[in-house]
Amino acid sequence: MISAKFHIPFVLLSTALASQADAASIIWQAPVTVSAPSDVLTTGSLHGAITASGAAIAVNGVHFSGYADIPGRLGFTNLYTGSGAGSPNLSDGSYNDLLSYTAFNGAGETASIDIFRLRAGHNYVVQIWQSFWDSNWATSYSAGNESSLVNSAAGTGTPRRPDYIIGNFTADASALHISLASSTTYEMFSAIEVRDLTGAVPEPASWAMLI
Image 1 (cartoon, rainbow, N blue to C red):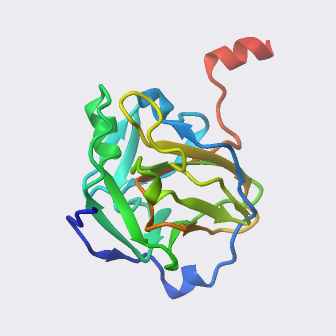
Image 2 (tube, helix red, strand yellow):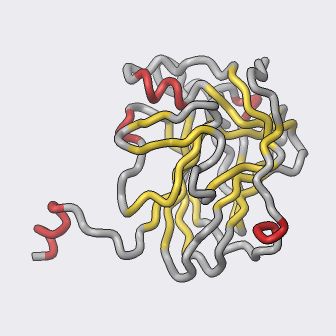
């Protein structure tokens, strides 16, 4: 049962932002069971990252803002925030904290993760963590294309751990709204990171390969 520690609906929509058209479809990969802080992507440049926790959390050098990205690039609509996810018992305390909170609503409710200030023509990667490992809270995400259900195969790993999912898209508008859906009890997510892969400075190893 979810303990809604904060239990306040978080809405980040202004009239101007709401009128913006969505960007192109996200191409999703298969869900992956979390393992270590190195799960957190560091490629390209950080567009924004938020956690359902009220406090900011840094994992693998990436800063996740609490509730909403400070520059106003990320937010979520019609979702409640709360604790109750439990700890996945990872060795890294910060990663545990990131996965111990959730933004949620009941199945069938209209809810979204919102990405703003996108640059048309830029390629982005989005990574979403789903904090619950119970299949009763399996959630899918869609923006043009729909992902597989995250945590539909609950209980993988020892100890049981939640999943994350990665998707890519090329922006053709300044905003993208990722819808949440579930056929079970709740639709939810724990954290999201968005990175801009266009014009990124290659890592030293990549330069060596180019040479």
